[in-house]
Length: 290
Image (cartoon, rainbow, N blue to C red; front, side, top):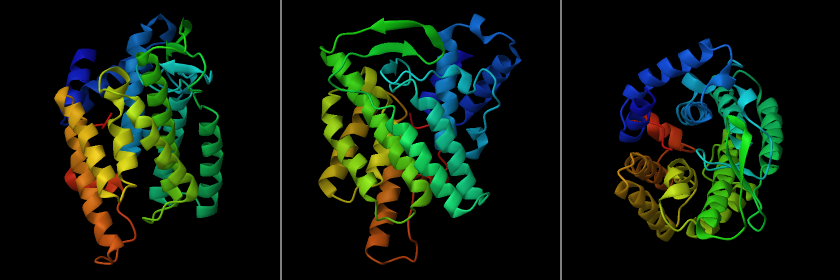
């Protein structure tokens, strides 16, 4: 089922959801998740997190079981081999997905949303990976094993840069929970600029660069300059060369966002914003962007 889940998640369509539901139900029925292979747990947790943050309320709620926060450790200088980000970040992604869900259902006031988003932003900032220091490599569900690394080597530099790209993308995602206009805050612009500085450090779509589909959508949705849009198109195309589904849907979503964003900026529509989540719903895209 894990093989089917991985295959179907990357080729697109909705069939992956059935296998995800089956695997996650089986994990929740297990009394002792420590006896389950950490790779399996981490992989399913990754799909769980990506689904929550991309698809919204359907997967946003956790239940404290094997897919809950108990799997996530808070060592700021450990990069997850499967997620490609700090091992502290997935738990915060789930928190951000829940907060976004609250914003769409109007379950709390704007002031409360703003307060909670600012607190979440502070927690995300604490997961920063130092590009000039040594880091460990591990898996989210494996608290016992860590691989030591040196600060040298292209692959490690790629991994550090990709981890920081994921962190900045989450900063932007959280900021957009309370700011719906096309005008970005100063903090959001800082994260956008940081991502464009980091992307050239991830020199290829293999390894760390293969999991940046969602990050490309998030930063691309904040971009008006044509040259930067072309650069994002090129990065998405590199994912397509790997036969990964993320490249195709990512650029489809972005083209729709850019079309609507240009209309808003030119005053051709009464809308205030058009987010990538709106584009996914309009295009009927149910697969996680990865």
